[in-house]
Image 1 (cartoon, one colour):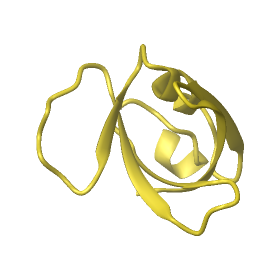
Image 2 (cartoon, one colour):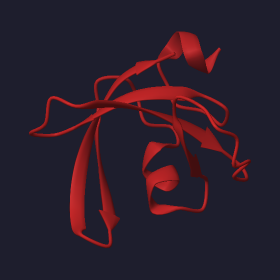
Image 3 (cartoon, helix red, strand yellow):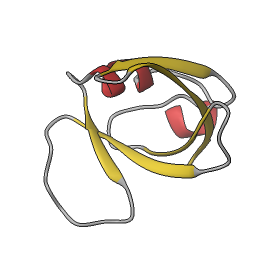
Image 4 (cartoon, helix red, strand yellow):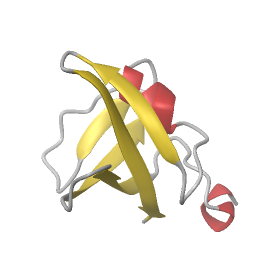
Length: 79
């Protein structure tokens, strides 16, 4: 249901792009990191990235504060 609404949910693989960049990345929102090798990186719910992604919508831009300061990412697609 969330997939159809374009809302990021736990278990979703999301295509994102940092604002100002052409590089697209895949992120999977997880409750706990599995460490599994994949074509995406995992963001846990309690991480700054996971908190920003949860319930974000396709087309929105989210802000994430990390070690190198604030970065903004556009939510492109839920795969």
